[in-house]
Length: 356
Image (cartoon, rainbow, N blue to C red):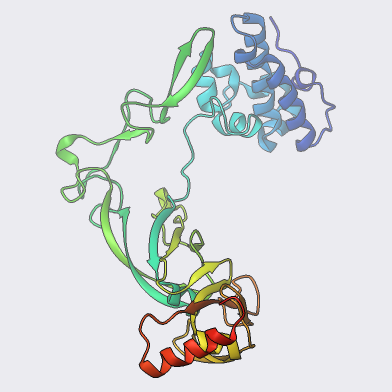
């Protein structure tokens, strides 16, 4: 049977641009994809035909040769879906194309190397450090390419060999009912290569990576709280095959405090107030988070539990300028022991107090 015209297969004009050709192939692939038409040989052949047409028309050199000589001009040309009777081989050959059309899912051939893994480090700090900010030096364990074999996993003078199970693709196909799925090759772990035991690097055992500890300086800004994440770019694990390194995320845990209780960016505390001061009013010393103290004037007749606000004496706002407040809660201190003179004075006061 003679081959159909490639432009006819995709349903595009002969002067169609690359975006139109790709769009047409997307429609054909979605319509005839084997996973959507299990057991349908006609759909499978239509899928192969569309893939072959796209292989030619998406390549400038092949398309020019086809436009001039037709199908005869494609005889002996490298590539092309027509050379692949086996669907698994077809998916491997067109891995990048199908990965793009189907969002990287399904049978996209060998997986592309990705950036290195991100790392997490949980860092505990004090409330005072959260208030003022601090610089910490962290010791981060991470995996890096072996310096001896430069990440290949093979001894000097040797090299990894193509995996015989997946033929270097890094993936093998498996069937579940009518559906075919691509999974990482169990023999090479998705790498596409294997190393003979005798050729494995002595330092990394053939893994191509070693575990090291690295010192990383981290600046903790004022105002952080429990759960704040600090990102340190490029300080995660190194990426494979020269890909970028991942990031380090430092997750903070702010310790509780024996005197202050934090609510958002406000600090709450209790301040002891003697009875005479509560009755007559006066000055009390209030400790601040920065280690200093501030005298605060209380009005006469202040009640237990009343609050006095010290504006701008709380935690700095992490997302902007300014600070929270410090709220001092009045705690009335009743003396347990009195001198003879104090007792006489309280007795005189009681006699003058109705209902006492």
